[in-house]
Length: 235
Length: 252
Image (cartoon, each protein chain N blue to C red):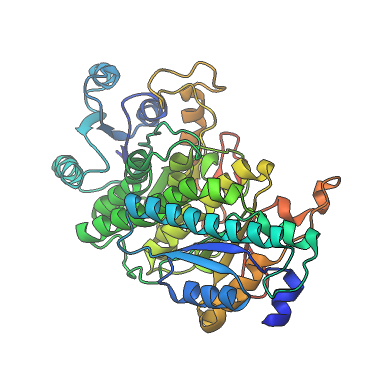
């Protein structure tokens, strides 16, 4: 059975990705940040053998180490890693205030968290499919940046894209392949409550993401950001 | 340099340089000073929110004094050399604010590989706080002074490797990650402030041209680009792009 590790799996896109990969027959290690949110436990009741819930805060060294210990007890091979965990902090206009604390925590989770997890998983991925997948965002694209605020979130996603480029520079020659996914404007819980104004249900986006994450491409050396329809977004 | 100063009519202009300890910024400061600018500076290392506030206050106070002395000159009917002044010219010089804000790069960034260890991670967090957050605080505190200036321009010194499209390096992770985030910061800021008349520059240093990078940067920062309000597609000021020493565009 193939294995996948998914971070930020409690709800929204991460949870839906767990469902998709279970359907695809994968053994899913689901990173759980919010134990009080019981959706994953409910899924586990139906898929005892295919789903392992792993407590995980991607921005915490000890938490990542503990998660790796848990995963290593169950398997010696991870085929696919999906970095999905992300946060957004509230920001005011630049003339009013700078949310330095929020900027930093957003960077630690959205950017460095993805890197830390990648680093931790590499030894387990050596024997697997070597597929590294990152949920980024159009918000990280400088070329089409349209916002006049949300510095912390946008910069964290741009930093993530650069991190993926650096990983690609180093790991593609070692056989790793990469996916960068812009999930669309989701009815997710990024800001706390479910965003009903958004365009897409997480399930729809996860379905398209899973196809891109497991499928192969002709030119794997080309690093690109793709959306739900497979359209390419610029950096 | 004197010729340049006349060419660009830069007399009596003021700039604030953040990250002034870097080699590039030292050169920029030298160039601007040669051209007759008032240049204020703040170092990146050891900078705090308090020191940024104090720096903003100092600039404000200094500019007030300069304004006052210019007002006196205007009233006296003489220019600084004791000649009878051209009222229109002196009047233009009286409105003193901060014209240019320059955000330097940190050329002391360690060439760490972030996959290395926990210490590397901690260094990345520390540097992000020190550079990205402090830059935003500088912008936040300097905006009222820039509003009062005649140029309203914010400039970033970055590196060509901050381009996600064109970064082939596998070693200096931290510099590239922070550089890319700064490019996004500049872009959002441009979206926010361009409607208020602000313009932006990002100068991409390349290793090969390091020695004269500050000279190239200074000239790029003070030159205007095409701007036709009635034809925005003709207006290079409406788009932001990194440019190297020859003005070549480097993709994001």
